[in-house]
Image (cartoon, rainbow, N blue to C red; front, side, top):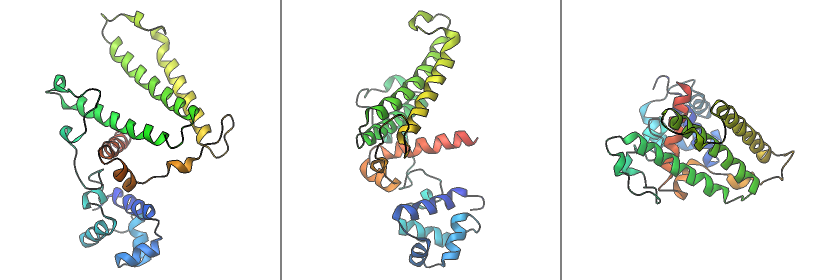
Length: 229
């Protein structure tokens, strides 16, 4: 397991999600607190026996604990495993190219979880700024692809070609700034929201969204991997 930084991070995450101190977790796992601390900090490597024991204790797969699968059960998603978009059940036109299908489903399912979480604290400004940010991002990507074909009419858009990238980036930055204010403990412009309503964990997400959580976990893993490349 040399160099497996995911193991130490996930081991710590699972303990904190359970609300356990290092001393309590170490006692349950049959090791010293100092040794568990070293494992969680990545200072020392553990043996296979400990991986199996920790996986059983936290109710996850060894693959999840080692960062090999983003799903707690260790499952690897295929396109067929991901629930269909109820608004577009026919993906036959994508046959022969699985990446668009997989990517679309990961995004739709992850957004379903995000917006469902927002129902717990239905603040109008919060929902609006998140929606504005996402709309601007999709607009920018769609227009980039659309405009790559010279035959497509630019008159579809009201913002000139030379300006839309800067406008959308500015719109996204503004929405992000507004969101940070809304979610802060001491908002400047907005009413305070109860962010405790958003408290969750990987286990809770898996239980609340058994059909969708794997998509979100895969999206997180893919996004972080791409950002770290």
